[in-house]
Image (cartoon, rainbow, N blue to C red; front, top):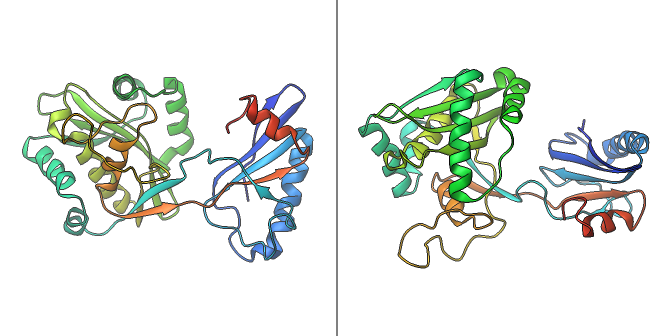
Length: 290
């Protein structure tokens, strides 16, 4: 089973199968059936191509060309992630980087509190203000608030909005996570510039891991690190951890790898082309992601 999304450009479109399980079982026998269904819906949308982003390599038992696929463009979702096994609390803390573990314990000593929130009204608005604060600080874009409301509504009981409150009473950090099978995936997060010194943003991830474990998950996916390890995670002025600004993900890399776990690299994207040449042209013109 695969969800196919389409971006329309006048009379034609580009299809996209988001990252996730596409085939579980005998790939050589199941792939022709899945490909036929993708072709059917692609024709209805006059698709130039459909890009697939599998979570594991697909074994077609033949080369890509014989299977009707070619190598696709660069990843739309992050090419790598960090997956943390949800072992007991002491073991989770023990596998963390020393500074990460220090911040988790610092938040506890300073009286930071945590809890799940209803994904409506003032709660979501407060987390959204933190997102705007974080976006300004780190120079990246965010969606409108209704986007996050729709995400949480669609997830239902499989989603959670978690918050961390500073000892002064203000919301210091917030995150949205989703449960899928035996994994919980960290989707969105933000922290307050004013209350950052309490370690709430780091400690909130630890709380999310505990929430995930309590809800039956065995793995916590931190969703997205740079495709290549940075040469250094320190800044150029002082021997301190670099921040994350725009496309500079050094701080993000250090933050997520600080929890331990395994760095996972996803396979290359695949593309089913119906009008050779036109998908490449669409990407060159910036109509779709390249």
